[in-house]
Length: 90
Image 1: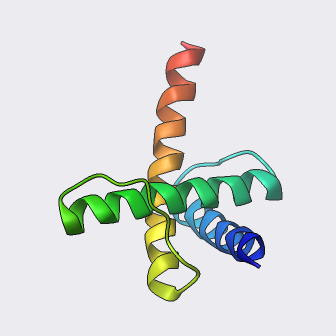
Image 2 (image 1 turned 180 degrees about the vertical axis):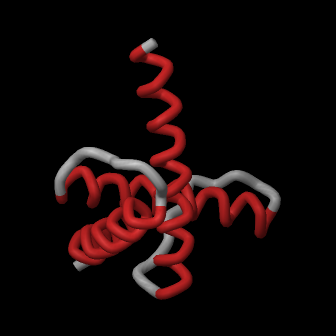
């Protein structure tokens, strides 16, 4: 059941982050899910860093606050991916 929750969280967070972030991002539904799952890990890790003061590899849960943190993490992931792909194409 955990895997299904991760896929749902990834799809929701990735889709919301793609809608919020300006510009166009390629990819289909699979890349959106992966982006959202990566965003959940980035957001969860940053949240644990700011709340406890130590960096831990953590993820968010399928809840409203967890979705918000995952969306913020997915936006960070889109930004970082844009930086990496831009520096490779130059």
